[in-house]
Image 1: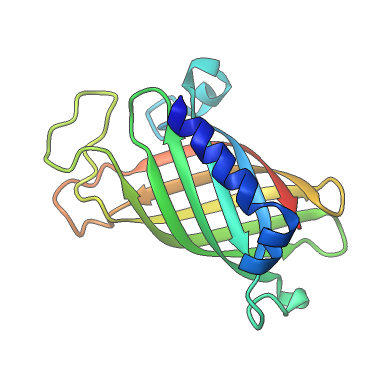
Image 2 (image 1 turned 30 degrees about the horizontal axis):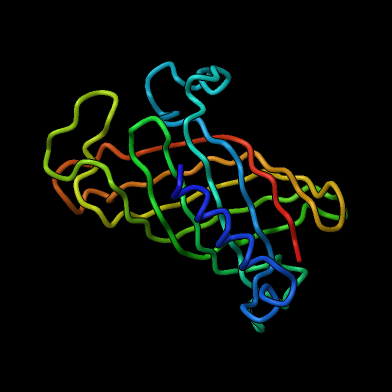
Length: 185
């Protein structure tokens, strides 16, 4: 619990208006995910509150030249973490997110790609429901369908997947899905 409080304090400090501008922070996101949504028959398990074990936090950054093409959407670097509070796999990740508005509406689509490090099994031994993920560095991709509720606030349905693309022995992969809220600066 102490780690969570420290993490929240650090994020709160980073997202203060002057700090956000200094670091190029353009958006803070957070939400709850259902863990292992790719289990057989688990899709409807996302509505089971016992599966809501993951907290996701993500920072997106403005980079001049990458984010200045509004007709094609925004391409922004991101840093994030999905932390599991049920004793299963957690990960930290980084990459690029591409946010594309749907015509002249508040609806947007987003895709991201990058890398992740996790704390799950890499030695071939994982007692169910934990997963043997093969190696610690993984590829991570996500997709979101969102709505800008105001000029600064958004809500989005997100699915994230991490795997090693068969580059290591064992590649069970991990798919989480849930809802996130975003706040733009």
